[in-house]
Image 1 (spheres, rainbow, N blue to C red):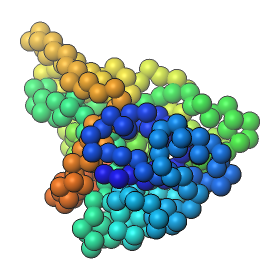
Image 2: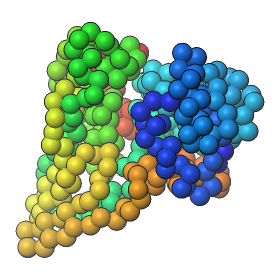
Image 3: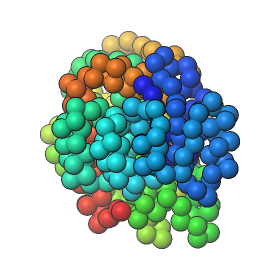
Image 4: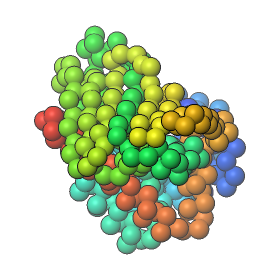
Length: 325
């Protein structure tokens, strides 16, 4: 995979130090804004990235790349991904994939026409611990309740309260608690439990942004409660309760560093199967393989999951009267 990174924000800075440890992955280019050119060039130099651009189309035309990682503000995901697919590039798009179902349908159509890989970067869906959870849910008996919480006092919240509406909080940019960090809980719960029958989101609105909120997902015999907060600290945790026991995760649903199983018969098991230095390593290893093999079956399986999560997120936002973008 010869990768062009479009975006130079927090998630990019977090992952780049680990990229060189992934076999088959080389970062050939990075794209940022003209106003941040100096910082962009420093980032490129620090991580051995050969080329830095301030124009996506120039990068797509000039750089020796086959894959684009879209890591720009949420509202720009569709446009950048569309340009990359039309240029014949595989696309990895940061969460949330896009803001509307019709956008995902358009991008999926482009990828299918060109037999390109198109995937959402959602780390937990590639973790061994999450797969263990999926395989061992049956040991809990009949499932009854799920609680999945990701709460943090955002590093941008003080600026937001003072009047600076940065993309992470700006509804026009696709920001807000649900689509920023709440989406991780939706990915985990929908990935394990499937698509719910009912979805209701009750947000706390501050200056037009959902800074925190509770999403209730209704299943025939199960209720899942997903909490996302950018305006108050945790703890963050996940609990899945069944008639025969409980599954516990201590920490936010974008990591799942360990899982504990406690059964009514006294059984206690704790598993920690993921040993990579960073949570995004496993997903990028999977992307390298998927692209090398041009695995369209796996692409479609992953897209089906992302489409289901997007449907739930849109239903949640609609229930609260929130319109993004």
